[in-house]
Structures are given as structure tokens and as C-alpha cells.
Length: 297
Image (cartoon, one colour):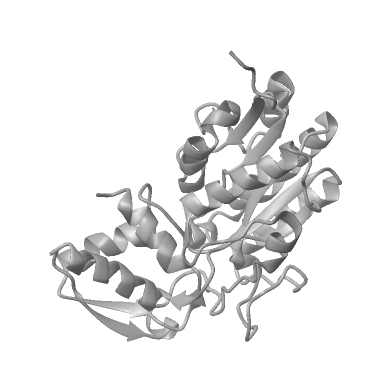
């Protein structure tokens, strides 16, 4: 019996039932010991509890997959949003640096205002429109200020077969209703949580095998682009192929669907830097959608 040349990693994952965390638990299961801390095990609003857990576990790697992601709700509870999205990541960064281990953290296209005409790069200056985006940007800044090894991975329009997301909502509404009005002037790349988890695994393997690129902030979203209307159309096409009912879709502007939090009109993220530095490339959004839906069969 031969022993593996790469020792198993002890990985702390914060967040248990979120879309990205669930996919991470599948993708990383064979890399070592996964210590998954959900709300029942760890209150991210309690900085000392975070420190205690990290110091007791002494992981080889910390992945912060927990976040306050209710964009509209965040407008009414900014203190909670900042506690989870800003203060907690900063604590994780401090503790990771103290242990000399890397931190992987997920951020968002909402750190930008969406007014640029082309895809955002990591060099573009953030300018969030609402509490959610401001809290996530503050989390990025807290991690960077810690000075330790870290990857901040900005993604966009995350969906999966679990939780609450656009894919599952559309699948339900398209079958329940005769007509649906969907926003068509917000442009981005729907990104399957499975893609994020797979890319995270590749990044971990590069680091573990001594082939890490530069630490810092990167964009990680599916390639290609569409609108929410285009995403809904693609979901509807798959329902029709399965012989299921599908509503008629009508494209509307964002102004016709007001929400408490303003959304960026341009959520496109240029992910070429991640490919250059870490040799990790993202699939086309439509291909990833089909791969995701294959798990529903």
C-alpha cells in the first residue's frame, strides 16, 4: 500500500448551508479534514468566538464561505451586514496570518457601481451602491490590511440547485405562471456555485503543490455574458426540452422593477488575471448551467 505524497489538509470552512459552502464540501472532501462551521457552531457576529475556533482547530487553510447575502434586507440591517461581511473576514485574516496559513474569501461584483462600459478588472476602483456592496468591500479591505496570504475571489450572480437563487425561483415561476416580466438591462455572468468550488479546489492544489500565483484579489465568474432576461430564457429553454410548461417572457428595464437596494447595471468581471497568475480558467456560463442542471435529472 503506497502512501500519498501530499499530506491531508485540515481545512476550516465557515458557512454550512450556503450555495458555495455546499459545493465546496463536495469538491474538497478528499483533500483532507473538512471542519465546516455553520451558524449553530459559530456566530460570526462574535469576534472572540471566531478567534477561539481558529485557535482551537489550528487549520492549514481557512475558507470563508459565509456571508450576509440578502441584498435588499441589508439596507435595513447594516450593522448585521457589516458584522458578518466586514468584521468577521478581518478576524479570519488576522488569525490566518497568526498561524501563517492562507485565507480564501468570496466577494462580489456589487463592490462596483456598474457604470463602466466594459468588464471590470481588479484594477478598477470600487464604488458600491448599497449596504451589501459596502459591507463586502469593507471585508476585502480588512483582509488586505491583515497582510497575510489571502485570495479574495469576486464572483457574480451565484446560483445552484440548493437554497434561494434565481435558477430555482425561475424554474418554479416559469411553470406556475403564464407570463413573467424579467429585467433585461442588467448584464453579467450567471456563475454556478459548483464552478466556484471547482476553481477553488484548483487554486488550493496549485498552492499545495508549490505552484501558487500571487496572493491578492481576483475575479472568478463564468465566462460570457447575458442579462437576467437572457438567463431566464436559457432556464425556460431547458424546461421546454423536458416537456414542462413555460411562461412567456417579457423584457423590462430595471426602472420597472424597483428594489430597496440599487443593482449595478454592469456586473461583468474580467477573469483573465486569475488565468494568467494561477492557470485557472472559467467555463462559459451557458455550459455551466447545463452541467448544473444535469445534477437535477
